[in-house]
Image (cartoon, rainbow, N blue to C red; front, side, top):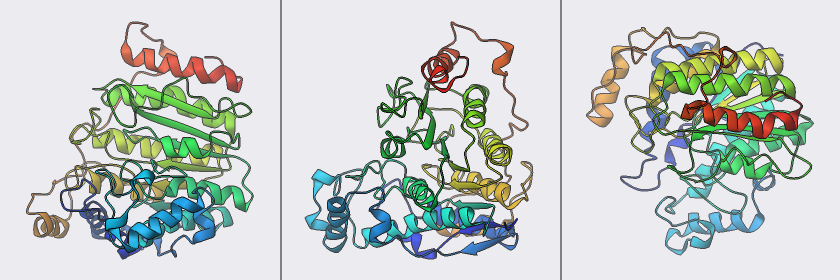
Length: 390
């Protein structure tokens, strides 16, 4: 197996552009790519442009009639069929929608193929992580579910156990739905509580279908959860489950919208805590999956201050050259940001909260604390189903 990592990147992914003023501004992909280059990380990994996902690949997850509806809307946006979630406020139809969505999916599928075949140990597609798309419909800014497609491709190639860890602020509902009945896939999602945020799913009681009980795990975090609570929840749930499951590949989704500056959600996590979870996922891959790690992007709508730094940290961790949080950002990139956005770019790769700390679950819990209540609810719902002590 090659020790080098792959960065999956095709410049045309920036054509994923719904309309002016939509939160999915393509600059949220262009700026991270520029910052990765400014730090020279692309010299430490292979930059690969995979082909778009074809019809047979898309149908590993998506229904044929839905793919045809996307194709039709892509050719004629005015005729988009809203019954498939297309042409809506969240998912406006746009010309070329099918082609660019399939291209993004292709980068994640290509990452899965490279890691499974041993061409790379780690692979990153920060344009991916579009975890809300359902088998038969678009949802939450997502047309094709590249994360689910990557996992489905791994299964097709012979993987028997794939773990998926989603730390986006929104529930990874589309990936959970795709593998709800499949015990070969363990889906773990940490997200803001469904009472206060889209898609209003991801309750701890959602644990998988009959025959796959305990294969879906949901940690519903109270609005306002910050670094210490977020990391406490992650470490109280994820490592023990991943260790028990023994995945052959770890797939992780790193939406940056848990950040306290994100305009679409209500958690209060810093860039430094996001980096800490990226490092933890990398370690889990080496401890339990022979290092096989596929890391995806996801949400994140503070497109200048947060998203580029968070995903550049992710790429750096995967490349084996993690960036110290206090590192000064290259002036060339800061000038690029101003030229593109007329906004001032951040100066350092930190929010000033490094090193982050949290109280380990083994040290005890407070039954009156809302965060601890959320952790207990998840552990009680899932851990016994997997033969673990809640």
